[in-house]
Image (tube, rainbow, N blue to C red; front, side, top):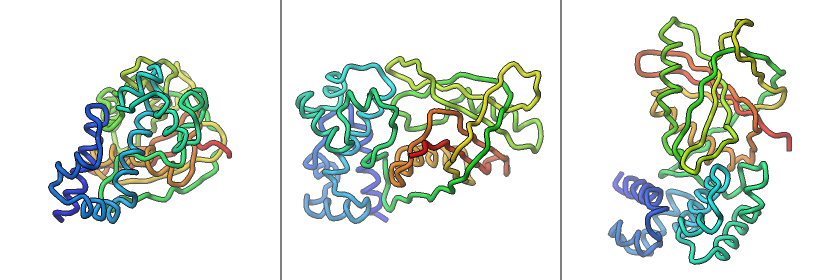
Amino acid sequence: MLKTLTINAITQYIDDNLESISIDINALVDYSGYSRRYLQLLFKENIGVTLGKYIQLRRITRAAILLRFTNLKIVDISERLFYDSQQTFTREFKKNSGYTPLQYRKSKVWVFKNMTGHRKANHNFPSPDIRYMERKEFHGHKIFFKEAIPVIDPLTKKKWDAVDCFLSRGNQPVYISHRIEDEKDNKNIKFNAVLWNNEADNSISEELEEGYYACFSFSGTRNEYRKFTYNIYMNVLPFYGLQRKDSYGLEIITKIDSKSCFYEYYLPLKNE
């Protein structure tokens, strides 16, 4: 138990400080109180990669988020993540992603093989159920919301207030589709979401595109669900080599009791 707590504290420390200090193994030896050799053995045993590699991949993944969702200059991202030069950053990013930072920013790709989200000891990668879905038009009420970059706790109050309002009306599940907006402001990722209400006279009409979807299901509290969805985007999709398509997905939320719900999550996939 103590070892697990230590590893989880270290991965959290790394995430908390990616944009605050230059993190290296020596700093984590001091932080943990373990010897360098023992810490590296313990980390590899519980996380599956070496400590140095994990730090490297977390920096690259944070850089990918900043490249994709902000207009920050590449040199500014390099400095923000404590690379010693833009050239070093470009070399490390390409080595781990297969793209230069500029190529990645211009591409439609989200996931790359070495993308690594925050992990805890004995991390798991839930297997998706891949399903083919026909095109479906839906109607409903559209809301706009944003999540601070990096999106660690995807639990926007505006979205969930709307979900709670729908759930309070009865025992029917809530259907909600969302996608990322193109507009960037360097601090937030902007989304739009449509809460389904299949009456033709609603003002908003959108569609789920025909194609393959990665489907996940989860039962638990909202706080547990946000961790689950973070894991899907940042760890599971790269692990299985799946690319999310830029179109509407679908969440189906069914209330179990006052604290928990059953969630079905459908992510549209690129055909590759």
